[in-house]
Image 1 (tube, one colour):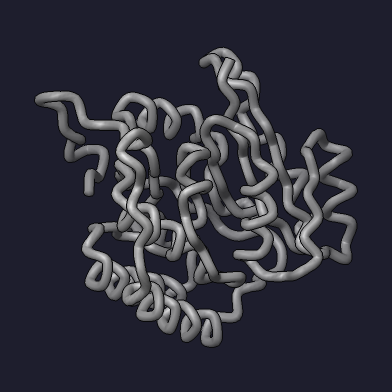
Image 2: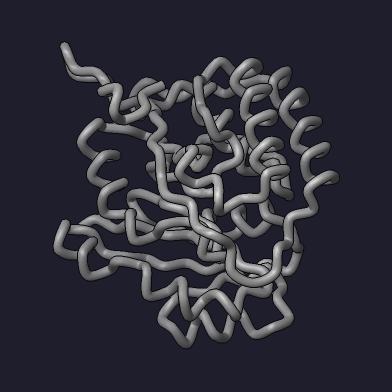
Length: 252
């Protein structure tokens, strides 16, 4: 059986873990031929997040240096799955949709799959100001990187482990989310984007909207003008003759 690593960064999310963990569809994934490697990154929490995650069956990685990107860097380095999926610990992302996302990922021979939360149907789950900021940042990101992604800030992605091994990422904060997408698409990996349900956040909001937004904007321009490392030809999954990504997939 192949292994799907699910990497979840968590800072003081003990309140949300009892609601989040039952959403991990390990039994359904096993029926599909996938073992589950659940990795929770304790980003120096003070509320027992790591201990609780471990008691609920997760493999816990401790990252003492706080920051979204720092947490992901530790978790992704520790992941050993053939494919890696991600999502936040705040109950906003549909981990129960992973089997469907994995089927899409495999059916279209993708190497990186992004998800799009910025749908009319999800408006009630996000503050209006945050929705507007996400649209602005995503629009600037599309203009700079020409990859067509509608949601550069989404925290749910799926990619083959060798993709992570080939990327040179620098952000330790929230900009990590846009950086990994723009790095993967610029490097030549086969990618697409699909819509997902986005749910109201549980617990305390930890986003620092203005400073995080300014840093994301700075990072976009800094990233755009640095050298891109190409993907070795042997690692690229070539599109089969005559096949293409359907419009319903949100192909980019």
